[in-house]
Image 1 (tube, rainbow, N blue to C red):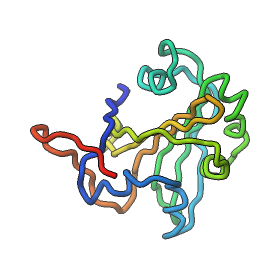
Image 2 (cartoon, one colour):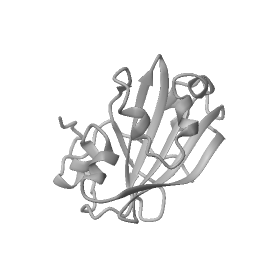
Image 3 (cartoon, one colour):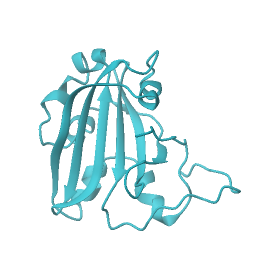
Image 4 (cartoon, rainbow, N blue to C red):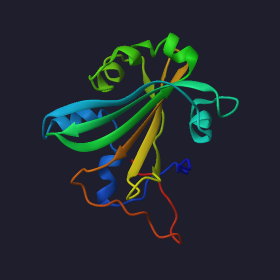
Length: 172
């Protein structure tokens, strides 16, 4: 699977609004149903080129700690999430990532006011029907945690990119 090409701005369309919202995606999902988390993977992997760049690593292929989950709303797939950090990150400020179990990442991210979130980037993943995805980098004590969320199975309208002749603009 090829790494996606991430863009720094989402297309402007009503259907992309859920992707552009700050704050906890899990909390927004919980407003309209019961949220559960299924762990797909938790452990060490090698950083892909796009992930190494997002983490500020010197090169791809370095070891990173990865947690992949399916977030479900009312038992139906909603979001595929992939979170990763460096060796220093998992030994330091992001060590709680190892012990989350089936709790959502929001339990770690939105309880500490010292955690800062960087800007969103957007892509369509090279999976199946190419689900729209966003990612951002969270920072705590100088260590990065990259969080990618793919919008799979949600009853939101399809997210279409703007035609190529139009420019990308960030919305606020």
